[in-house]
Image (cartoon, rainbow, N blue to C red; front, side, top):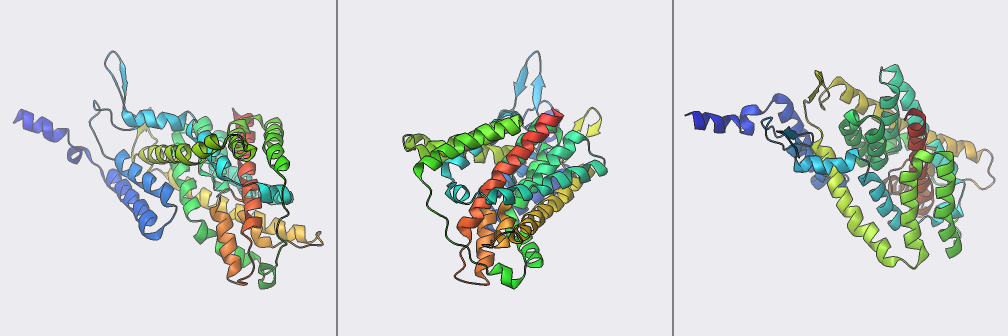
Length: 389
């Protein structure tokens, strides 16, 4: 009977809590949205499965979760904790940026430098949310990490949280990726509210052809300028531009294909799963519950939503302001793609415009401000890291 009792006590059934059940249900919902609704399946599916795996309870002496170690004269890390090290150490986000750079065409941004302003304007949500988080009682480090959610950039949010507020990494990452997946739901109502039908049908001339020399020089110049403005952004912007240089140089096709395919996919799987597994319902550190189901996590989700909405507002309104001074008007819808959700936000803008004019193709123009938003959010993260670290 003692053996049987011990076996029962080591099972998850004997240790499971209501919080674990709630988080497992959340993981199932994420998988449902990924498979049935098609919302960012490459991200939500491994995150959802990670949430389930991270909330399977185990006895203290059995290292399974991302935070578990056993100390019996030595330290034994769990397998999941080793995967999570790639997140907390900031390894995975720059590698993902390397892959993104290797599959992204910067030609539209090079041909239309004005899009940089739209990408910068969309970062308004980051700094507005930083101030809002301070008002709600978050520390400077926590507020800076939460604010980056407004850029709708999962890797950047994870990177800055790992540097400034690792105890909030789980909620921040889940919020950032959730809002990336909900771009098609969040942005259209805001675009409809801020623009008139006449503005939505503005047609823009096709981007000019960009020379190979420009494509090669661009990532080098951006890296130098971004690093000089915000040295803390070098890890992200530098890797993004390295990936793009591998693609555009024409002499490293194998490296570019590896970075943009195998490496990007591997890092996405490991990062997404590890982030999901980090969302334990309850985790006590120094007598304080720093688990996922806390008032702070709820506040992060609310602030993240407001941040993303403000970022969209900022991009569209700034495009309308630019039109006051431009002879050749731009479609203000492309301001919404100034957030960093590449290429989802650009696609949303494109399809939204097509509803009002089937011949108005804005995808390439929206990609210009979308790429500018990626660079802008990485620089914003670098500014925060430089100030608070």
